Length: 519
Image (tube, rainbow, N blue to C red; front, side, top):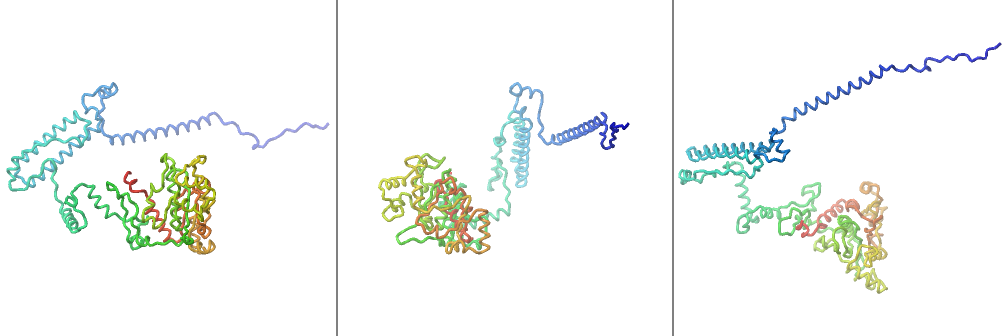
């Protein structure tokens, strides 16, 4: 009979699970970890104790005692100020006493070297020293919190004996102040300096009739007006390498106090900048002008200023007449309408040589006439635009909203397609005359690519130069808002031209003098 029972199964040694670890094994591992932790804790404790032992001598000694602590906790007034000085004021008083001792010793030594026969004066100094010691000890007991600058001990010297000894001589040195030793080198330099000042007829002499005041402010004013250094670029090149600064002078600020140090611009500019003519100037028909209009940024004043600098540079480069927006409120600055010329001197004669500026009221009154850029047949619309050009409100639903003028200018002019985050505005002479395809120089293309950094170059050409009105829709919170500095939006491929417009912004787009004076 066959046996169909299942044969016994045999497992390899690998398949048999290992015996469980004994309790002693894991207990021993825990004990090792515990020992390591205890050891590290002891090391940390030793380090802390050692550090405290090293730092403790560095602190001032503190006069702690039980009575002082009880007086502090119970709000009781201590018996004397010295009980609460806690070491610091005590050290100040001891330092003051040491300084006084040193001054008295040095004074006595110098007087003894000058005239050893002045015994009464010497006796007076010894008396003074004794009085100072007594007074210092009293002040340490009762005036622990007295400031060092207020402690001025009286000094009594027998002047009659000194005067009798020094008849016919120079008056003795005042004992209240330490005698000043003459430095031969300093004396020689001061004599040379006084001679050089006397030889300069243009420099006002302090203390004379021409300049009776002898204070520091007038001296500083006389120096700062004529001797201020020129405003220069970051590189600070020497004058022989910066011909644009030849003939320039540092700007000044008219104010009842001297604040010329705040002027960071040059006025006038150098001779080369004064004679500069932009290669990108537009041409207009006889009797006509070409304009640049813009909408102020809707943010705070810093955003408005930053956006407006871009507009000023474009206006100066293209030679277009800049039309200022109507007076309107400035966000977070005022609740009434403001004009842009209240902040910047854009109507000055020097600025007018670079950019011609007119108001919106003048612009609409002139160009809404027959044959003008803004000619309108509807009389009511014409009247409404003329009124808004005198002042408007930012709110879109307001009946006097600035949006009416903005939308009207967008339709009548060419809206510049400069998108701050997507474009960089490039001024290149070859592109201006023959189109963007004329820019073939590898070096120029590399510089443009480096400047734009991923943005698409938008070349200034005939498409932007031909229209009578070039409009910037910079109040738009979408693509057309220019919320960047001009030197990161506008690029002139000619370095000389690029540097000129950086100097233009520095020297002209600054606040009025009265704002600096008020600041």
